[in-house]
Image 1: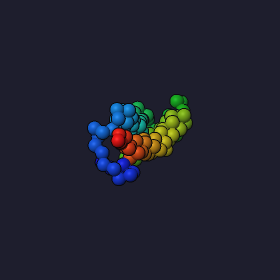
Image 2: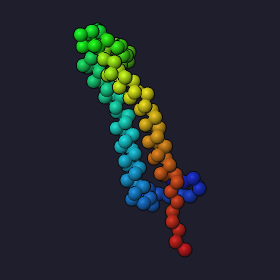
Image 3: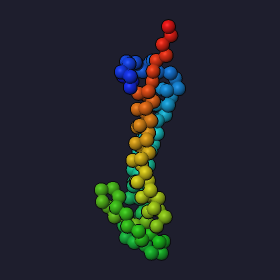
Image 4: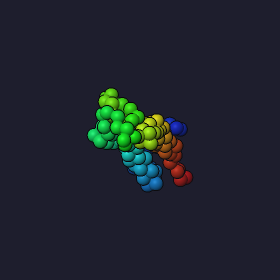
Length: 110
C-alpha cells in the first residue's frame, strides 16, 4: 500500500491502534449498511398492505422492490430518516478508513 506521500508500507507496519480503528470502521460499515435493509424486511413482513385507520397505519411506503405497505407517521418518518442518513454514515465511515490508512507515516529512526 502507499500513503499520501507515496511511501510504501504493509499492513504489519501499521500500529495496533490504527489496525483496531480500521477494523472497527469496517464493522461499522456493515452494521450501518444493514439498518435500512433490516427495517425494510421488518416492514415488508409485519406492516399491512392496506391502510388500517384504527391503528393509524395509513402512510404508504414502498419497500422491497416496490411493494406497498402502510405505516404510522412516526414509523414512516423513522424509516425515511434511516434511508436518507445511511449513505452519509457509510460515506463518513469509508472516508475515515481511507484517511486512517492514507495518512500513516512510518517513524524513521536514524
